[in-house]
Image 1 (spheres, rainbow, N blue to C red):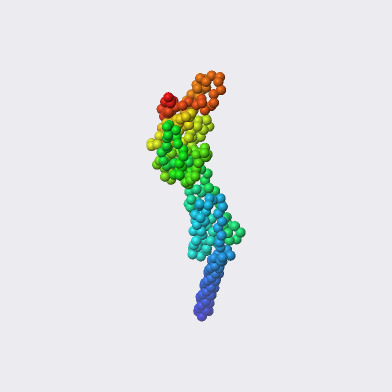
Image 2 (cartoon, rainbow, N blue to C red):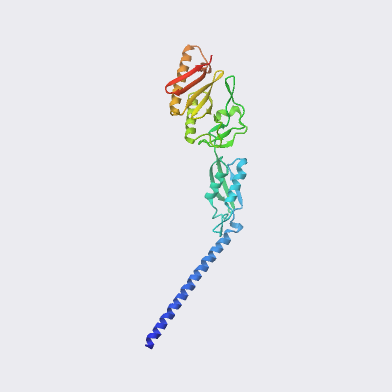
Length: 297
């Protein structure tokens, strides 16, 4: 019996020592890990590894301040209250991209990379205007569309989103942009799908040498296109009850037929192209293959 009791006591002592060694080992691991974390946290806040200079390229002077401010805001704070977000190795690239994109509707794309050790370079690509949208009704003078004042107009991107004021646009540069009058427009001209269809209609007229000046958005899918002819502006009525491409085809067919007739009437005489353009008060392509019109007398 004494021998058995001694073995039992020895086993308990060994178990206690084993548990003590395990606890010491775990505590040592925790201390090492904690020390490593706090050491890394300290290093992440050192100015040597902190982004101090933010350079912005590709952006207009008007929005550089907003872009830089958005990036600076994204670098504030810490991860888990331990690691600096402004650390050159830990900075939140995707967060900065999103913040910069949100800083201005003029921005199409953003690239972010750190420059040298404590610098950050933000490369901005601004949108290219696909159209000019005026939140007003068009002005006419003796049947001619007047294109002069564009202070209230805005640039629209390929989705129809209005993103910048068109300050100092001259009428001589209007051919660069498709022009729309949209009295109800605020942040977008219309839905992206509708805008793309109208853009195709606009481009289709240009490709067929029909001198379109602008399109007016009306209510319930109704539109007016203004075409320059000899000494007048022809109004073209169309709508979205059918695909705009169908109405465009009918209009082009009618227009080319009218041109052919005018050319035939001119005989063999050399008649300038602009003099052969039919002069109409309006052309209406909203009713199937039937095209209604009224000539200017």
